[in-house]
Amino acid sequence: MLTQTLREMEGDGLVHREVHDVRPLKTVYSLTVFGRELSEALAPLSDWGHRRLEKLAELQPVS
Image (cartoon, rainbow, N blue to C red):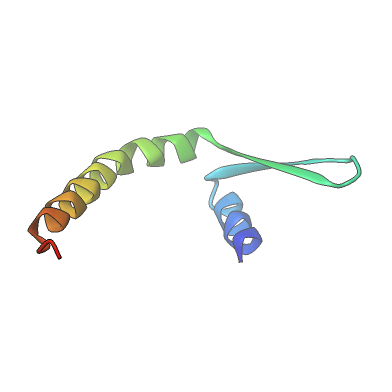
């Protein structure tokens, strides 16, 4: 499942895939410029989500 997701992200231009011809086979993934831009754009949404989870945790009754 992870490999399929990474391949899709590669196809979308979000990650770069580099295969090293060594034994055992080694594959390295890195973010492309487009992937880094997307990560930066989503960072505020991620921050909001973490703050929301903290608020929800504060509202939970302590047992």
